[in-house]
Amino acid sequence: MNAFLALGAILATTACTDLDRASAAGVGPADAVLDIAGQLADSAGLTYTATYRLGDGGTAHIIQAPSRTAYRWPGGRLIVTPEATIRCAATCVTGAPGPAEPLPATGMITPGAVEAKLRAAAADPALAITERDTTIAGRHAACVKLTGAFEVCVTGDGTMAALTGVLAGTTLDLTLTDLTPTADDAAFKP
Image (cartoon, rainbow, N blue to C red; front, side, top):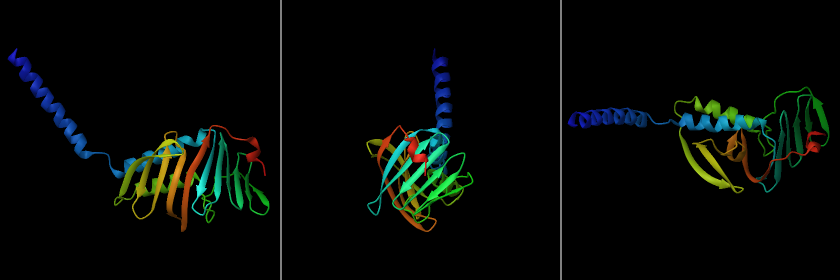
């Protein structure tokens, strides 16, 4: 019986040592940043309408359905479909299909542009981040703040919930105010 207890103590000590090493290694800042980037990427197949309050008091929207996304902000729109990319300001211009752009100087940014910035930041060995959880528009959101750059918050399903900071020389401040699981087809037409 004592041999059993001794063997159990040895196994427990060994197991704890392995766990301690894993805990000591921990999860690095890049892992948290890549997790948020992955959530943003995974949300590309969702259907939703997200309404955002911009830092200047304006309102912006992201309307997404599989393979189609429309961005609306005060003074403009960007519609991306497999058939075309449509940019609207005073008038609309239709171009070849392509990925959404970061939307500089609009107060709005695409989730894809945020994902790309996060993945690039994760490669920086000097990356310093702060993580936090919060509630935005009644939904749980995980946030990462890249010291000296920006903070992004993402809901559990990967919808961008908030972003504050400077990206590509543009100061951005947007916060999710409403999220519905539908997308109006009219949003994808000029």
